[in-house]
Every structure is written in structure tokens, then in C-alpha cells.
Image (cartoon, rainbow, N blue to C red; front, side, top):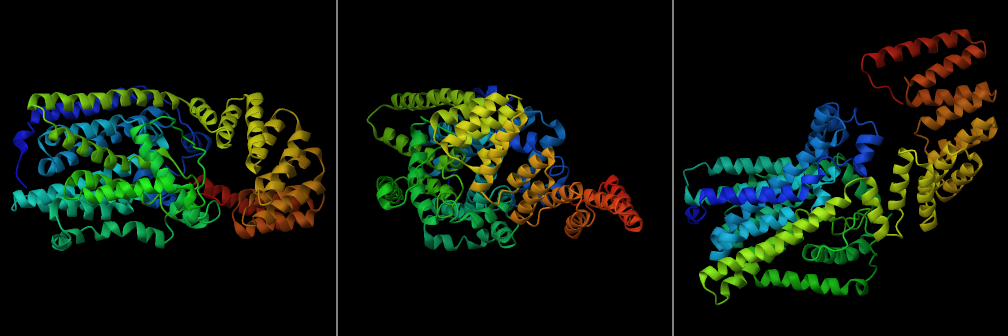
Length: 603
């Protein structure tokens, strides 16, 4: 590897880096005060996040496998609370860092394997497209998907540092290449604590070494000592999965076959990957929540399969003709190999999943485009302006499209109205619009959205939410009918049985209330709330002995549950068992004292 730094003057490099950051800023400048939406809203507004984000230990207990991601969100929470500006600013900074890493990696590759035009223009082209592409907002503007961009930053950083250390070893054997290699290993470790898709990073580093350092599999064997440094980092995700500390991995295991079979998911992903490629080249019809058809046989995906096999064949064909393009295609497939394979995820397609892989496809396209331009019979000056024209022709419309796409993310209403317009037969958009209408006190609108949801697909969740709206609107009879429909659709729905029981408590029919609460207990015996509700119904109905048994069943699960101890003290006092009443009053005082000192009671 030769030192071509004189072909990349510092001033020009700084200008290009500034241009990349500026392009990103023009795309995202209007998003910094956008409110929480979707999972953002559930995490930071609807739910109490103070316990999960109160300190590093709480963050680790909440989700150790994505500790760095959630710790970064916790820092935002400590500094700005629920003001979204800081969250958006950090997401934007991460995106810019990813784009600069893309520039850096591409520059290193182009210096050795690119022609004159590629060395000069390919890094800027790839980084600008990555920064300004309209498929990226779901990983940038959508706060909850910080894990996607943050893991990509560490992923790209680890690859870049690894390549840099290899180049330094050749160019300056006595230099600091070992320190850079160690920094690459540290960065790889950080990636493993950010998002599970980084499990492919070991393969990415090996492939990068093969393409741009070793050059052959035989020579790659000599790289094993430096690759061994990464073994501890590469063991993190498998270890977390084996120990059951990865919530996302557990979800995949429990979900497998329940929502969609591995077979159908894999066939569907063949079409999905084709859709991702189409969106990269023609980003029309973007959607947060696609109503994507499930493929059940090869007949449903054969065209996409033929296209992807052709693309894979192209990567093989180019391996010695255009190594950068070949690597880009392989990187694209590798980046999607976790979420677009045989491990079923609840949503078969999400645009943020192509955030990191997009680098590979943009790199491949750019490398082939500039190689083709290099071969045209033009003068050097003409080729230069042709390269500039290609960059402007690609970046300007994509930047405009990204600004327009970000307008859709302006608030909860705009994003979900866009969804229901594009996926009218999918219920989640109606659910989300209904939730927001309830939060804003627009009960008539909420009823409209939930009725659209149940008319589209009658789900227990939609029935429950519709019942809640009817209850708040002063129509308890209609609400009860919806609650009953909900538990008919999903008998294990605890909150449905509780809602029915609460209805009868309000009407004074304690026997029917108790039966509903018993159904709730049977639906999930480990939960405490149904048992507390059952105890209340039995106590008010005059069945003191049964009420005591219900409350004592809570004590067996959570000995210091405050409400259960208080109610037992009251029931024993009402039945004349003063000594037992005083025992539980003492337990209540102890529980309150423990809570005052900062303890967390079982509830």
C-alpha cells in the first residue's frame, strides 16, 4: 500500500467533510424539535421511564444487550428530560459520524483499488448519498431507532480502524498500528453492546481483510493473530443469548412459528431485500408500516430470487475486476443477513434495517459508475465535470426527497395518517391514531379510528381500546360489550377480564365482578393485580374468608405488597381478629418505611 495522501490535500478533505455534514444538516435541520412518536411516545411519555433510566445499574438491568444505546438515551433523559431537542441532536450527530466514517473507509479503499476518478470522487459521492438518502430518516429522525445508527457508527468505525491499522503496518511497521488495531477491537466491543445485528461484524472484518489487505484466503490465514484480538468482542452477543440476557433474542425464539414460520419468513425476505434495493435506487412509496404480502412458496418470490442471485453472481464476477464494487455487494447482503434470513421478526420489513447495509449498495453502485466513466473516451477535464454532474444529479433530488420524508415524521398524526393512507388494510395505524386521540381528549375521533380498526381486522386490542373510549364517553353498556368481544377473541387477555370486573364493581354486582377477576387470575396466575381486584370484590360482597385467601395469595407472590397487607389488616379488623390485624398493620408500616428509603416494593 503506497502513501497517496498528497492526492488528498488536507484543505480539500476538510471541505468535503464539511460538505457532507452540511448536506446532512440541510436534510434534517427542521427535525430537532419533532415530538416523540410511536415507540418514542410509549417509552418517554406514556410509560414512566424514570426507574429504567435513573442510573447505569438500572439501564443495565433494563436491557444489558443494548446497554450503550439505552445509556445514551438515559444521558439525554438526565440532561433534558422529555424535551426532544437533545435526543434529535444526538441522533443527527451519530448520523453525521456514520457518513464521515463512510467517507473515510471509501477513501482508504479507493486509494488502493480505485481509478483516478474513483480516488478523487468516490468517497464524496458515497458519503453524500449515505447522508442525504431518504431511506435513512427512520434511523435518524425516529428517536427510538438510535440503536440502528449508533450500532452502525461502531460497526463502520471498527472496520475503518482495522483497515487503517493494516495499512499502517505495511507503510510504517514501527508505527502505532497495534494501538489502532486495539482501538478497533474496543470499538467492535462497543458495537456488540449496542444492537444484536452487529453479530455479523466479525465476518465483515474478515471479508474486508480478504478483499483489501490479504488479497487471498491463503494470505488471510496469516492474519489470524491480529483477528484473534477480536475474539472477546465477538463472543459478547452469543454469550448474552446463551445466558438469556438478550431480550430481543428471547423474543425471536418465542415468536418463531407463532406469527410467521421460518420458511415463510425466509421466502418473504427474498422479496423484502428486493424492495430495499428498489428503495435505494427509487425511494417512492416509503412507509413506516408496510402491509407486505407473505410469500409461501418459491412461486411468490422467484423473480426477486433470480435478481438477487444475479446480483450475487455480479459480486463474484467483479471480485478481481472491481474489488470495491464486489465488496459493497457482499457487505449489503451481510448487513441484512440477521434480520432478513430465517429468524422471524414480527414486522417483515422496516426501512431502518437497511441503514447500515445501504453503505454497501451505494459503494458498489458508485464504484461501478466511476469505473465506467473512467473508460469513456473523454478528456480529463470532461471526466471531472461529468463526475461532479453525477454527484449533483444524485444528491440534490435525494436531499429534497429526504426533507419531504422528514415532513411526514413531523408528529404522531402525520406519520400515522401517512401509514393508513398507504396501508389501509393494516390496523396498527388506526390503533396509533386512536391512542393519540385519547391522549389529547378527542374521544369522538378516537372512537372513529378504533371502529376503523375493528372493521379492518377485529383484534382484542382494538376492541379493548374502543371499549375504553366508550367508557370515557359515558356509554358503559357499549363498553362492556366490547370488553366481552375482546376476551372472546383472546381469552388470555387479562386486562379484558379486569375491565369486565371493574364494570360490575361500579354497578355493585360483586358476584359477577369476582367471576371476571377469577378469569383474569386464571389467564395469568403470576400477576398480582387480578388477585388484588378479586380480593376487593369478595370483601365488598361480604365473603371475608374468600377475600382473605385472595389477599394471602398475593402475599405468597410479593410478601411486602403494600395494598395486600393494608387490605388484610382491614379485613381482619372487620371480622374481629384484632391480633392478626395488628400484625399486618405492622407489616404495612415496615413496607412504607422501606419504600421511603428508596426501596422498590413488589407490585
